[in-house]
Length: 434
Image (cartoon, rainbow, N blue to C red; front, side):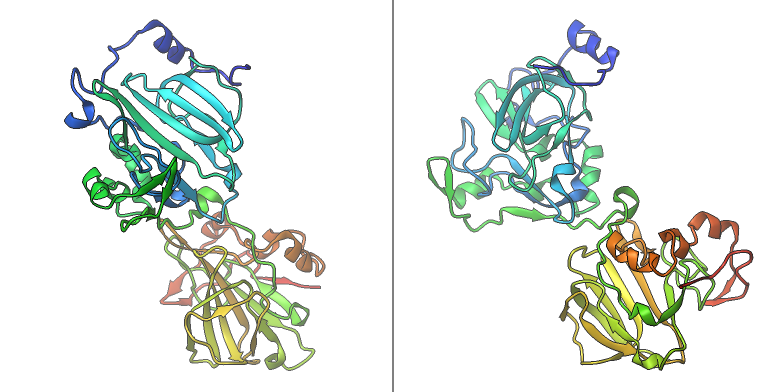
C-alpha cells in the first residue's frame, strides 16, 4: 500500500520510533482505568463540532449494538450527523491523537481506522466511514490534527469509538470522557456543554434496557438517543452560501440599486460594523406606477416577524428553510394576502406590491453567526444563474453592488442616531442598470 502523501514532521517520526521524550503512560497504573478515572488528553477533535446537527449519546440505540466485555445491547460509540447545509463528503476527518495506525479495514461506506494513543498506550481510538485521502499502513505514525480524509457522504454517518485495554478486559468509554478542555470549546460554541449531555450512564441504560436481535437494536427505550447541536452559521469560517434563486422584485422595473455599505437612507448596520447602510435600495424606473411593482419571497422559508411601518406598507422578516441562520428583511410591501408568524412561503411566491413612490424598496440579509448578527449583501447570497439577470443589465461582478468593509473604513461616514451626517466622499452610492 502507498504511504500517506506529504511529509510527517521529522521530529515526530523520531519521537515515535526512537522512544525519545517522556515515558509512555498507561491510563492508570495497575488498575482498571474506568474505575479510577480517565485522562482528558485528546486535544484535537476528529471532526469540526460546529458543523454538526446532532450527536448520538454513548449507550444510545442509534445504530447497531456496539458494546464491550462488560456491557451488552447498546451503542457504545458516537455518531456525528453533519448539518444538511454542507456537502458531507467535503468535511475533513482528523487524527485526534499522536500515535501509530493499529489497523485499517475498507468497507462499502469508507474505511475504519484504529489509532493507538502514543501518550496512553492502552487507549485506542476508532474512526468509522472515512474516505481516506491516501492509503495508510499499519504502524504508520500519525500526528494529532493530521487530515486523514473526509466523511464518506450521506450514506453513512461519521462515528468514533474509544477503547481501553484494561486489566479486566476491553472496555469502551465515551469520546467525551477523554477530550480536553480545549477540545470541548468546539462544542461550547453550539451547546451549553456538559459531558453528561452526550452520555447515557450505565445505571440509566440498565434501568431502561434495549432489546437486541443479533447486532440490531430493537427500539430506543425511553431515554433520548441524540443531543441536538445549536451552532450558528459561521460566515467568516465557512463562507457565504449562494442559495437565492429568485429575485425578490420585478427586476425589469428597477432602474438603479444602492450599494451595500452606501450612505443612502440611514444607518443600518450590525454587531460588527457601524454607521453604514448594510442593505440595498431598489429604485423603480419611471415607466409606470411604483405601486404596481411586484414583490416576491426570495427563498423558501417561514415568516419570523412582520409589522406595519410608519411610512406605509408592511415589513417582513423571512427565515430561510435551507439555511435557517439566514434571515431576509423586505420593506414597504402592500400585502396581497394576510400573513401569520410561522407561515411557510415558497421561493417566488407573490407577497404583494411595493407601497409606492414615497420610498424605495429595500432588502437586507442577516446571518446569525456564533458571535452575533452579521449583515451580508443580497448579491453575496445569489446563485450564479440568478446573478446573470444583473449581468444582462450591465453588471460585471457582484462587487458592482458592494462597497467593501475596508474601503468603507477608509472613507468613513458619520452618524447622529440612525441619520447620516456626512456624504459618501469619493465612493459611489448607486449602480445604474442598463
